[in-house]
Length: 231
Ligand code: DC
Image (cartoon, rainbow, N blue to C red; front, side, top):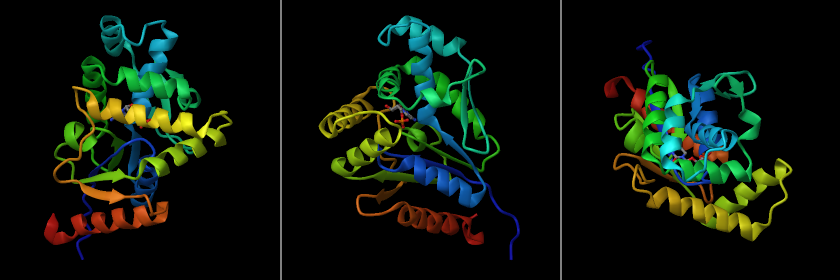
């Protein structure tokens, strides 16, 4: 048996609420890889803009902010932490305000350029699972394995609603559905790195699949890539 184990770069893309972060976290755990949530980096940039008093449509100042802000994702036992200029902002990133701020700032090419450079630097050694919107298409077009995870809008907004309610945020079902649809539209319609399916991505529809089912499909694909005759 070949004991050499290649440490893969695995990309997971898809729209809001498709189950990417759960799948990415569990896949990374199963393989002892590092999980990187690229959406958290866009959220961190939105957080920084708001706290620096920079308007979310002020392209010039946001471009400057992108270059001067230090964003880091560091591993911790309870899950990855996001540091903005050394300050741990992880617990402030999952609010409706940051949903909107990250969605808006992520349309700017200057912000994307900066974050893509940081994301590539994190993957130098391999052994990573990164989720987002452009990971298989732009960040790692040469990824060893790419997944595109999707689900019906109704199921995706129900998941988002559940997440927000668990965090104690009072929200209405219809408002969440509209917000998810709006963010999808922005992700798919933006000029720079829109959300699309990479030609070589494995598509998984999680509408009727639970997290175990998604993980099973992903692990089978990993085993296939790691087979000695595929290296
Ligand atoms: O996955 P998320 O909801 O945490 O992402 C927050 C926002 O960042 C989302 O509106 C889309 C954007 N994003 C992006 O444009 N590219 C990525 N690779 C990840 C997220």
